[in-house]
Image (tube, rainbow, N blue to C red; front, top):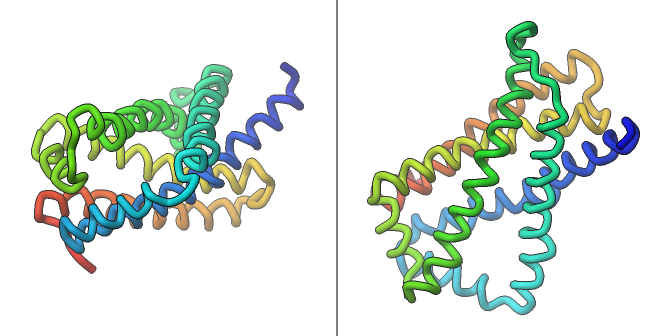
Length: 209
């Protein structure tokens, strides 16, 4: 594959990371925030989402397929990339490497999350997602997986926004890239807090704002 084709594949990969996957992440965090309203409100909200017409085809087309495509394309791009952190130990270079590493972790975490939220409830006939999550977060292994997974997801998303600006030529100058670096850090901290706060809310330790 030539450099021109690689360039377009890289742009498509970056775009999918923002739309629809980035938007889905934010909506997903919003849906999770219903935990602060209690068991009934959380379960009712998720059931309303599941009962929406055409919800499964929508999820397949706009969530599952983009996730798989973005994930496998990211793995392919990562294998083609050249890593030189030892000879070029700059912050931006480190972020590039962490983006590839976190991408692999996120890809694996997505499968664990889908099993937790979609497959396990059907296998074990859970009637309450709230109870299911509460029980799961009390297991140290599950809690660690989710804490690491959310860390990887939020970093990958925030840093992906920064690389999106560069890949699409929006932030081509050093000044713009420095500004978006700080913006990405702020987004990372905010989304990480939201994700962790939701997880600890299932344990009765979340902060309702």
